[in-house]
Image (cartoon, rainbow, N blue to C red; front, side, top):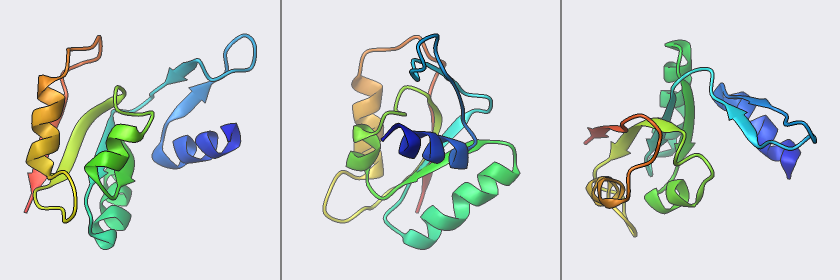
Length: 115
């Protein structure tokens, strides 16, 4: 499981630093993390690649629920949201939920929406 997390983090442009006991308690984000949340597979495949070329770390999620269930919610600095996603939470719904959650120690989260 740890190897899977390391591979996903590496693919996203995130470097993890192992803690003193070999755990991943110290996650270091070298580049700002952008989460792309879209039900369109072609967007999830192409947009993160473009963002990485521009110097960002990027991860893609097929739904708002998948993003919320991930370990990277608090590390994400920018969301690129699809407005209409069938069968679940919409982009604006996710933005409202995040805006209503208690603030964290991380920087402000920026939202971008695509139609």
